[in-house]
Image 1 (cartoon, rainbow, N blue to C red):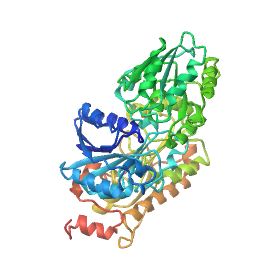
Image 2 (cartoon, rainbow, N blue to C red):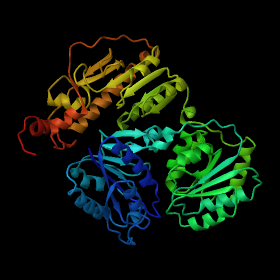
Image 3 (cartoon, one colour):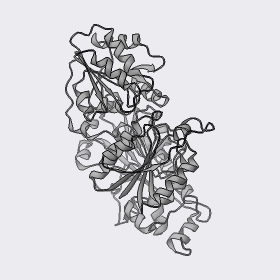
Image 4 (cartoon, rainbow, N blue to C red):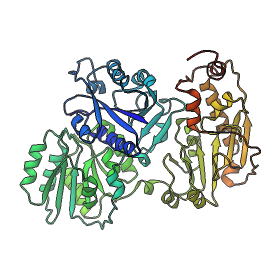
Length: 538
């Protein structure tokens, strides 16, 4: 695959977007894909840093921000229209682009629609959920108590959602290191407030620690290359034998694993600290971190002090003191915050959220979009597992752990017809039976015994691909509600699927379309005429 990233760094933006994109880029490269970057040459842009990591970078020109541009557009320094024009000019020189990855708060559906014809699919990394996207995949790695509802109505029907820390973009070092067991004693403190730290929380934390009697405690201080106070921080650290200064480190996992307590910001480092079980005292240094920090604090995952402008040295002293006395936030994992028992709802698509909300009114429900693991099952012990537009294949060993529990899948086709990917579209391409099915989840793909089915009819001259898709979603949600009591109690009858049926992969549809892009607004009749019968050229 030919994969292109559109991302920026600057003193205002910080380095976090580039760093997480680099993590993903390196993973793609290991898998054999071609990866390059498109970045604007803003002050403190990290272009050289990306190039030193072995990636080619296509630079867009720096333009002094116009007064008319406000908010995140001021970070971009140009309008979305101009950025899209400059980006597509680069994309046209790069051949067939399989995936365009966009990580930028200033860009939304308007930009993506212009760039979409130049890439087979667009993946958006976004944790704000404050704007619409014309994307095929959306990644939001952050922990929110209402994660499942945040992107409703903001993405296309078929957009694949990757939600929560299960999809966190952690560097390899965090997977390779073995988290150490901590005793609660305080011997080492790590200070890191992100690459830029424009409000100089690093110095605030240093002053707080230096005001305390921390005999026998060592401190590691980490800053990024874009930190405007890096020199003054370095000098302050040099005055104390127990304080070590680090700049733009490559061994963050090692430093975190050695620490007993971290003082830091919200953002990606939150998931790094949690991955290693490192207790943390956290300050929000950007508006987009506030909700994340509040939700994590409510779940007992961090000790959250508040926004940077409100947090004082005294607040930090009191929080560190509380930790030393065993009164601070305990080290927990995200699994520890999830409720035991009830319903485990597996999904990657926002169209399933009305059913998730409905179940939540009747039972304890845990929404999950990542790969199901044995650790999660041992912790949650769900009574019922519901898979609905869930993209991950559940492996045999996991199914064995689920033996004796109720595990069902909701599939928008009339099984055994159109197992697998894009069932509604294939029902029109091959003119097969149309409908929805609730079935027991087994080791095959959409092959389990049927609990309930319902046929669905369409007016092909009036129904569009979008309305037909939504009709199938509405029907299967209604069917599930009708059978809810029987499914929850396990008091239902099943019928084996009859006949060979059909099966399709995502690749099958790509091959069929042959580079042509369908639109969800076209009627079924129009779709058949243009794509199936070939009555017009595209």
